[in-house]
Image (tube, rainbow, N blue to C red):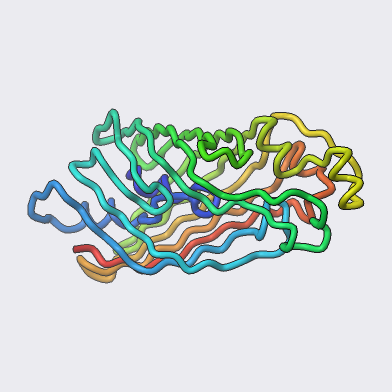
Length: 263
């Protein structure tokens, strides 16, 4: 599996998941093409994600999707606005990127949030590594808030198994997300002042496991130019996130669909 498929994860798929271009590796393998330092795919995309972490309501956001790379060194893929593979090979990537996701929260999202501070989304520094052996790929990524939004640091580890079925490429597997105390306090904590303003009970949080999840990615190549890409992440909130009075349900559902044109 290529690093492009893995970066779909993010939290908005990412997942981000997660960028959002899981057919690129299959397309390159399926049909010989002229050597080129540049690779470019663009198209419309649609993201599905909770209105806020722990929300029982989902929202849909149309968003353009891009997969641009130069010599498999510098890239812009989905949520990864700009990244670089510091180390790369046929079976591995190690690098960093500036990444966006849509995790945020507004007091207008739900009547229960009245009196709680808004949380804005912003860029994060992403450090990543992945390694593929046969049909299996292991990946790890760290996301650090660099915009002062209070979203702290999260770390993710995932294992994928991939199988090409003609023009269809399917990849799936489990994963976990860990979050530090800054992240859990921002999204799931309730201090005394916030409790008085919102009516929610006080709730202290700490660092630990945020969720366990399962990834499912699928891509279908219509021809050498056009492809359809689908991705879903189904998770269950754990630890401080699961017990928070802000959390309406523990199911954490994220999804993405895109149509890409490869030049």
